[in-house]
Image (tube, rainbow, N blue to C red):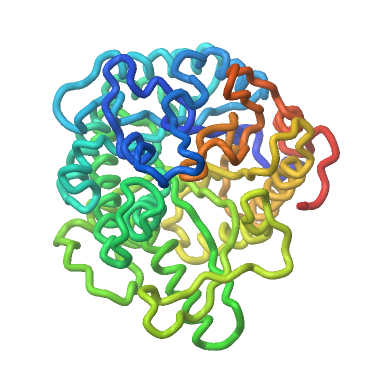
Length: 446
């Protein structure tokens, strides 16, 4: 019998975090320096000069945080492993204390009946690798595969789902093309090799993980659908260019074995690379927050599109448009584009930032509407098997520092006290109902 909610009884309800945003302890127990440590120390890079040296102190408080996850009745926890904590130089010797930390974390999840879903790379590249060229350097892909093998050898017997990369689009675009995230390079279309080298690292890591006995493997891709500013041919062409460059560039090679038309030559792609990248995966992770408005570029623009607002919709505290049905459309488009090549999907990030209020009805409404969008896609036949809220905790939100608040749990950064918000209780009740309903007043999107 089909579940009333549209979600299967074994649907993976979870929460997500990342190492750099919550762990702190950046100088403890042999951890090396990451590109984000360096970026945070460059004047003017991070709002109000914030850094992640302490963050949520999860490195010391992880048992309390795992108890919060267990208290939700969640089934899975998506976290990330800090490459510089495991392999400080990005190659060579392993830092035993760093690997021990993740060993304890995975054991703690098992003790609480929670599935572990670690992400191997969530943007915190070891600084020595960046000094050697970072993701512009093809060799970084090989170093990533070696690191993946090290971690999997230690943890594969207890990990339910491995996620190789988080949002390689963001690393390419914000880190290397626009220069607003670490490492802060502004190469524009010259950053395209960083997309390919990340995907090559993903493919090489898939092989390394399989060899180490990994059960299931995924990648977590950001999907930001383009909404053309008008029906004019030039605006429609700009939206297609945006989708090819920032969406399909990161899924087509994996699921089709080819790149979409990016409008430029790709001399960095070598024979055999696409075969490596297209190694079968078990899950496609979809991170979704909002669509984006796109229009034709002005003469002389470096990119084949210009960014515009999405008119007539509410926005989050960060100004991101709230369009839940765009998530449903993303899921349907993935099915239409890839057909039988599309593996089961999990929504590996979904969430929003508003103010720091504990009675966060806006967040409840946002999550309720987006869970509803996933439910609608499931009922239309899309194979979605998990949903992870971003995020369990308020945390260090990259270039915005500690200002945005994405957490189901409020964090007082002075005392490190954790206080569950109303949305935490809502999500607990939603999970308890099998996805039928959450507690509180969950209505339409704000």
